[in-house]
Image 1 (cartoon, rainbow, N blue to C red):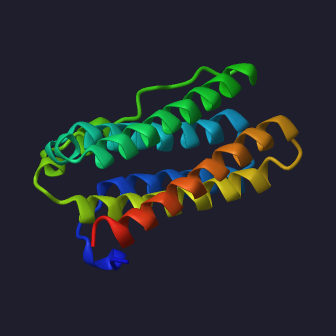
Image 2 (image 1 turned 60 degrees about the vertical axis):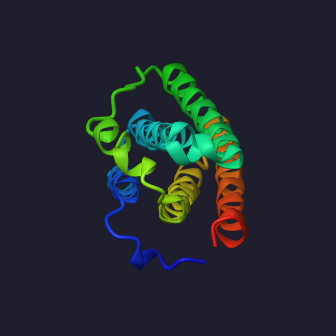
Image 3 (image 1 turned 90 degrees about the vertical axis):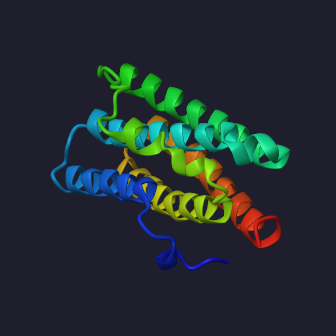
Length: 174
């Protein structure tokens, strides 16, 4: 597997880390659940953008397995986003689909430069950070079984995505 320190600037990971730090600060201050779920939803928006971009990039279009895998992951992330938005609404909040700056950093020409191993290594690092975010949120929502169940189901999907990316990095992208 590639070392994550060797992949250069990873805006995807930086955004996910920023969202995680923000959620951690909110949890420490006993913030409203809606804000915490919004942070998770913003991470899902970043994932939808990233995986959709790779699926339709030059490499994605030339490599059917890349397009298929990334399109499937984008669909999963979109489903997570909708589930979180629904829960935000149920809790009396209004989902914010505009995550400032994410689109500018994730819709970038770099995905069409033949950098699949780097992009997938970046995706893996970001997914691992998202997993930690969901673990922390799940523990935080221990007294809210409905929200915790949603977070745990999304966490399981994220763990599967990580496993899939590790497999791809070790078999297809070596």
